[in-house]
Amino acid sequence: MRDGSGRALAIVVLLGLAVPAFAHHAVQAEFDQNKRATIKGVLTKVLWINPHVRWVMDVKDPKTGKVVTWDISGGGPNGFRQIGITSKDVFKVGETYTAIIALAKDGSNFGHAFGFILPDGRKIDLWQNYKE
View (cartoon, rainbow, N blue to C red):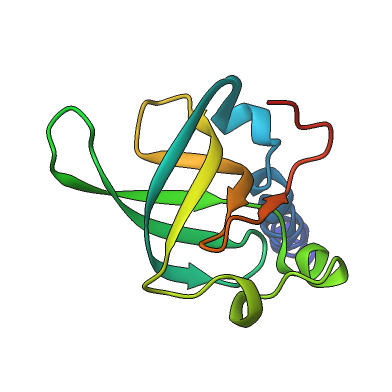
């Protein structure tokens, strides 16, 4: 391996290890915290996975009356568990929730959760320094 192939292999391995670090980004890179929305709909799926919990909701578009699917991202599941929020206890598929979100910069039906209003009216704040 004196011909440099060992060195090339080492560089490829190191670059491969660096890719996950670039994949993680700040919330501000994808969402506009100054463009907020409140959406109400039926929870169709909860993905309690790393690196971010995801909620999928069917929401009736107020302009067209058609049901559109929204994908909502949040923090990591371990952080939620530490404050007593778990998928089974709080978020139940088939129930209606209101989500307070920062809208995606690209205009898609994608948001980052500031908080939720649960079917029983309780409010859960998920974002530090969140102000309505």
